Amino acid sequence: MTEADGLRQRRPLRPQVVTDDNRTPEAKGGSSFSGRVFRATFLMLAAFLTIPLLGALVLLDSPIDPEPLSFKEPPLFLGVLQPNTKLQQAERLFENQLVGPESIANIGGEVKLLLSSETPIEGRKMSFLNDLTVTRDGRKIYFTDSSSKWQRRDYLLLLMEGTDDGRLLEYDTQTKEVKVLLDHLRFPNGVQLSPAEDFVLVVELAMVRIRRFYVSGLMKGGADVFVENLPGFPDNIRASSSGGYWVSMAAIRANPGFSMLDFLSERPFLKKVIFKLFSQETVMKFVPRYSLVLELSDSGAFLRSLHDPEGQVVTYVSEAHEHSGHLYLGSFRAPYLCRLRL
Image 1 (tube, rainbow, N blue to C red):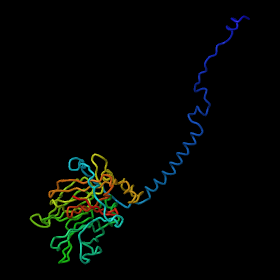
Image 2 (image 1 turned 90 degrees about the vertical axis):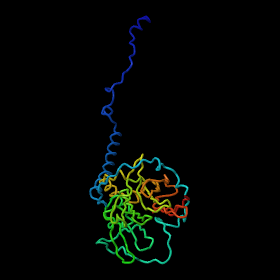
Image 3 (image 1 turned 60 degrees about the vertical axis):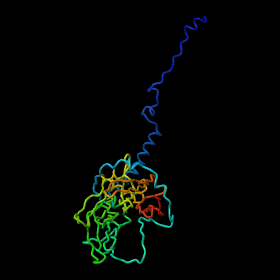
Image 4 (image 1 turned 120 degrees about the vertical axis):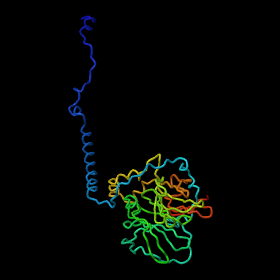
């Protein structure tokens, strides 16, 4: 056979094409044995975690029974509210020597019990006495009872539930009489007399507003809203040297941004679920540390704002007390006071 005949009889090699028909039956099924094991393990683990969680949601009682609350869109953080770091210029005082110094006052002399919280006022005991303001002659004391249901240690439960059992009261040091001036308030907190002592301002924290009650003059006995839709959740209120008022806020309603408390306000079911699963202390860890102090005019207009955006120096601010050119800043959680030169 010649070389040419051999070349003619030799068959050319064809390339082998791999198709699905060439796969093993196990691979053709779309998964390997290890993949099926992984999916089965994942599903078992998910069921192991989900079933107890669903059981807890169904069987556990929530400590709060909130109602839906509706707020306006928060004011934009522009102009007077433009974020700054002015509060970070404050100095800390008595660091690690104090525990939650929420309020500051100039006091002296003896201590005397005027009214016991165990004394029922119009059929209800006072469970959460909060703040007070006194007339210059010392006769009248206006004070807030934040709730007849919750106590001070339950402040976050009160805020999240928005219970409307708070009151503004008046105590007469001469007659020893107590009067309820305003009722059905949602977490009334700070209270402050006007410079002319013709009205009292009371912070309604859970409604992010400040109410006004007239104690003298033509409007005596009447009430209205002094300022509403504040940029944060207000705590205490104090007089400023300009004739206006300092308002402190330990949590803001960022705009632009996201406010968890605003988001939850219209979703009471989510509030109930959260407190079924987590403690107050755990929930507080999710509240951004943003301290804001706002100065209001005598008519409630925003004059200026002081910020600590990360709560680096002034943490969870609860009061701003002006004295001798300085602003003394209290906090319901920090172990110190702060002082800011104005």
